[in-house]
Amino acid sequence: MEPLLPCVASSHLVDHHCHGVLRDDVDRDGFESMLTEASSVSPLGTSLFDSSLGLAVRRWCAPLLDLPVLAPADDYLARRRSLGAAEVNRVFVLASGITTFLVDGGLTPEQLVEPSVFTGSSEHSVLRLERLAEEVVTEGAGGFPGRVRAALESSPAVAAKSVAAYRVGLALDPERPSDASVVAAVDRWLSSGSSRCADEVVSRFLVWEALERGLPVQFHVGYGDADLSLRDCDPLLLTDLLRATAPLGVPVMLLHNYPFHRNAGYLAQVFPHVFADVGLAMHAVAHQSSRVLAEALEIVPFGKFLFSTDAYGLAELYYLGALFFRRALSDFLSAGLRRHAFGMADAERIAHLIGWQNAHRVYRLD
Image (cartoon, rainbow, N blue to C red; front, side, top):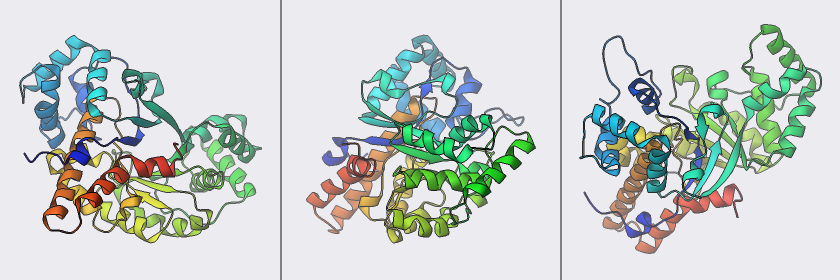
């Protein structure tokens, strides 16, 4: 394997979108269920260890637990259990080399612990908008808009995140909704008896309110679990909303994007406030990461692309996300150097922009 470019190997990494790691150990089914967005148990007897990511765990993670390369899955899981969750978390989060984490803690927080606990790294919070709505709606529809605004203004978060892709799809109307229309939408929501925020008007209201308060808004885009319809998660569906919010000048972050990563790169090129990444696609495609990252970087300005893992639950995902990202970025830059497309100074600047400088700038981490 070709060695990493020194500027990539030594660069800081800011993980601008991730979650916590598990507090407790899990059995094989629990582990496999967190390897991908799929269900771990199949009536047809398949295993998620027989996937690109499953093989990557055995190839790259096993040696960090003092196991042979490609140790059998059962041996890997037994060694993992013998070390305990805290030690496994420490080993992999530390080995990732990530220096700063932006953590969306809105997903099963009772099961998770922040990754920075194991490394002493810097950490910042990301506010999940739908969870905020589900918290303040308990006081009723009346006054809902004001309570959302108050919560946003008092939040210490450096960004907000929308999971509209899961709840209503990304074809959001660009118009900023009035308070009266929001209250009516919340009335409909409460009348439905559902605890989930899954109303297009409310989702759009949350995004506008966050952006108007200067909070960068992250959108889940593309690949996810069976709770979403992938056809409704193409970032191109956000075009009208992106056009409407451009005058605010507040960053909109398109997360993950696979298999729409080329579309996301286009949007980041044509809209000045739009940024993109490939997130969990790096560890999901594993040894194929160089091809996917090269596709994502075809036309996007390098000052508009960021690193993230979207790691959730398994500390291995931090390590593999960073490992395959560094490998893919090094391959991309090395290919450009061989073709004399740019010089080493350019490669070094691009590595630092994507690895950490863009995140520091758009989230105002300094």
